Length: 122
Image 1 (cartoon, rainbow, N blue to C red):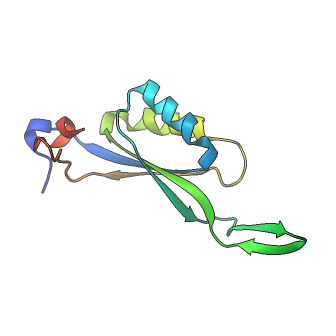
Image 2: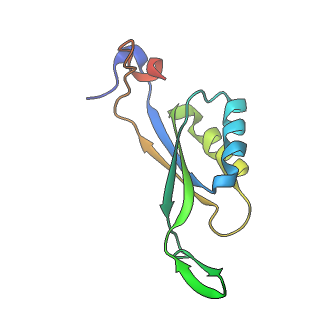
Image 3: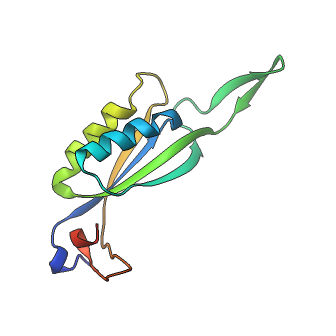
């Protein structure tokens, strides 16, 4: 199923995996940009660093997964660039593990309460 013509226009899902302490910065920056809805999930994973090494009571051990935050926002296709740039600027520390941003197409969005679809459902 494609998007209903009443809410015509391509929509994308922007998914950012960021450091937990950067969440407020990202939320505020997206709010200033006019992004109205976010989904936030606590997640764990690893990238190139393959986790990290911790020292606890003098013993070194390896943490296989690093705590991260996943932020998701559905946005019109023509706003994707500015949303990605805003997240990049707000989440960047310049250190390894800053995260990644993924952009994927959305087939359909439906607001459960009203039945609106497409952009109207945002």
